[in-house]
Amino acid sequence: MSQMPQQAAVRKCPSCEEPLEPGDRFCGACGYDLSVVPARPEDSPTLVVNGAVPAPDGVDWPVARDSDGHGRPAPVHAAAELPGTDSGGSPLPPPPPPPAPPGAPESVAPGVRFDRPDEPDEYPLQAPDPRLTAEQEAAAQDAAAPAQAAHAEPAAAEKVCVACRAGRVDDDGYCENCGHAQPRERDHMEQESGPIAAVSDRGLRHHRNEDAFSVGCTALPDGAPASVAIVCDGVSSATRPDDASLAASRAAGESLLGALPRGTHPQQAMHDAILAASHAVNALADEPATAREQAPHQNAPACTLVGAVVTAGLLVVGWVGDSRVYWVPADRSTPPARLTEDDSWAAQMVAAGLMNEAEAYADERAHAITGWLGADAYELEPHTASFKPDRPGLVVVCTDGLWNYAESAEEMADAVPLDAAARPLHGARVLVGHALDGGGHDNVTVALLPFPAPPQGAGSA
Image (cartoon, rainbow, N blue to C red; front, top):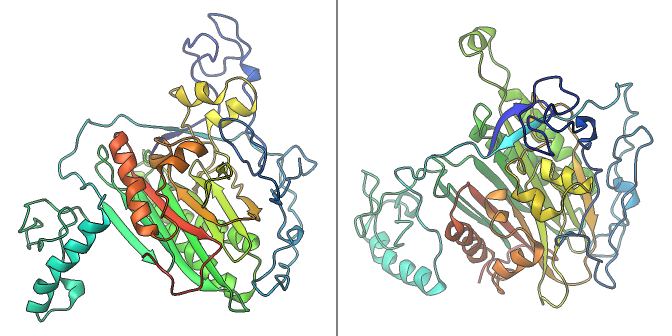
């Protein structure tokens, strides 16, 4: 997804695109003052549809504070500021008071990872197209039933072709019915957990899937349902990006599913989950000194993270990096919205007013991320935000492998099937297929969560 970590300095002049030398303060060609390159934007929850969009009437969207008083962006909201309630109308228990901030030095200029390394046009053993209609799914189940009954082995051991959904997969990895080569385990992953679902696919250009996800359902102390989804995108230029995304998604998911039943406020639980994910990724960098001497060019494993917690009346999102969360109203009568702000070069340019959104994301530097999880991250700044929608809807949690092909909130809403809240697994497959139709240049991962959280036991129709 990203290239090697770089310093925050610009390698080309933003004005004339002439190459720059290390330490240059002015462009030698046009004299452009390089000190005007903006700092990273302030952390705030956003409802962005190619610019600011007013919230729908009646929705109590929280408002972020401007600063912590030291020049650094303040957290979007402290958990104690949010009037979260459980399904019975009782207030959620407040989180423990935060520790006093250590006497740390002023913020260091953020680092940058540049996205989109060169990739060959095609790789062998492409992942299959995951899109299937409901009729094809039903036909596949009917066709697979006689084969499952004929074998004494458990059904879990009988692999069915991901392409035709009818043939048995032979020991050589090919379908006996259509002959399609089956993807590796992480090339295409699907999971449904009660009313939520997630799908991850390698895409059409990458040689492996460096994304990972974690989904699950739990209950608050009063028994009210809560849904959790975490999506992570490995930084391609880092060492072992697939391990980083897997470790982060598992750690964050386990942290959330463990904290919510204990009564931890969802926003505090999300913040703690991001820290747990960071520790898990940092641990991957711990290796013997001899290993580092043999491979001095290797850098620390790294990934981005985005997640959502949905309860009966509260939607909490958290992120580090450029993966996103979108809100799509069920009745489509009110505008959809993007609920996260990218940690990226493009977002900084837009926030500083130097480019509009279309210009920034068309630039080759657009996907240079300025925030990530990893031992070489300059400063971890988990972003969290809470929302209280006044109507049912769908929460879309995805990597840039999807939103590159549906960037604005309206485009994402158009790509989401109308019945996605009732059939989240089918909806996730359709969205992955939308990215593959667009070119599939990156790994694609998406998780869908209906809002409000349905009672446990509900699932796809």
